[in-house]
Length: 124
Image 1 (cartoon, rainbow, N blue to C red):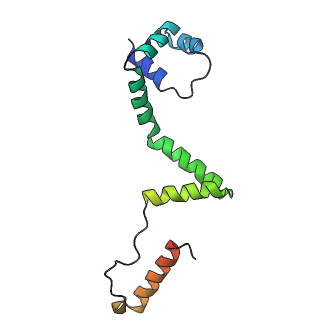
Image 2 (image 1 turned 135 degrees about the vertical axis):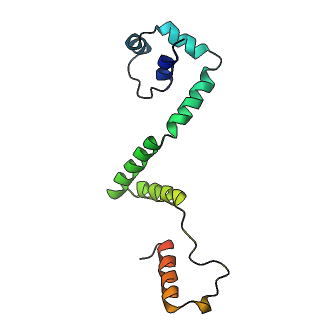
Image 3 (image 1 turned 45 degrees about the vertical axis):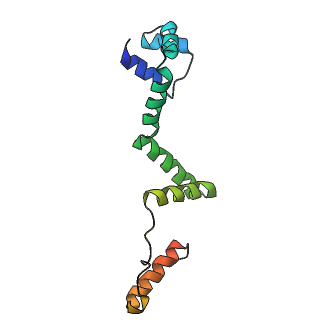
């Protein structure tokens, strides 16, 4: 079995045309494709390889870029999804630790904490 061609078959999400056309263009028979699909490990191998493909950083970045483009054009849902994604990869920092004694902060430190809290809460 030619693994590189099999890998192409497994990982070709943009595959267009019929199986016959794909087989012809890659030098295998449709029977070979059918045999690959019948193999007991085919489903698990497909799932594993698609999982690797779906977490590819370039693919994820394309999706993030598309969300940003839509959000920048005023698509509220895209903006919400983009902001949720950004928050997951860059969580907001707590403004103050729970044990911070605010009475000991300078005016500048209090002002900075207030600005940060306003941003976290969605203010300007």
